[in-house]
Image (cartoon, rainbow, N blue to C red; front, side):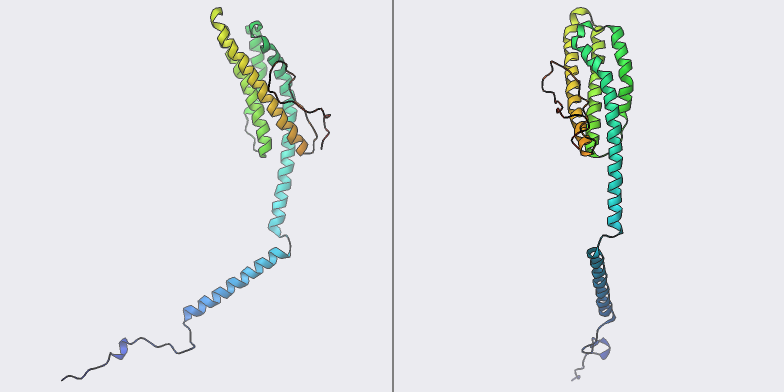
Length: 221
C-alpha cells in the first residue's frame, strides 16, 4: 500500500508573520496620511482668511460692474436719441390715411441707422441685455409697421383698409414694447447709481402702456 504524502511544500501558501505588513499596505497607509495632511492644510488656508482666488473673483466682479455701468450710460444716451427719431413716426402713423409715399420713405431712411445700431449684439449683464433687447424689439416693430404701410399703399384703394388696420396694430405694439424697455432702462440706471432716467414716449390713445414715475431725472440713487 502506498504511503500518503502531504502537499508539496512548494505549493503551500506563504505564511505572513504576525505583525508584518505587505509593501502595498504600507504604501496605502502612507498615501492616506499624505491626503489627510493636504486636506488639513487646505482647510486651514481657507479658514485663515481670503486667498488669492477670492481677491481675483472680487476684482472680476468690480470690473464687470464698471463695464455694465458704462454700457447702461451708452444705452441710455442712444435710447434718448432713438426716441427723438421714432416719436414723429409714431405720431404720423396715428393716421395712416394721411401718410404719403414720400413721408414713408423719409421715415424709413431715418429709422435705418437705429435698426443697425440695435442689431449689434453686445454682451452685458442680464438686466442690461433685457433693456437693450426690448428697445430693439420696439424699433423693429415700428420698422415692420412702415413696411406694412408701404404694402398697403401699393394696393388698390378699396383693398387698403385691412392692411392699414395691421399698420395701426403694429404701431401700438411698437409703443407698448418701448414702454417696457423704458421702464427696464429706468430701473437699471437706478441700480447702477445713475438715478432715474426717463425715455418714455408721450403717446395718447394706446392702452396698457407702462409709464414712468414722477421723480426728477437723476434722483433715486
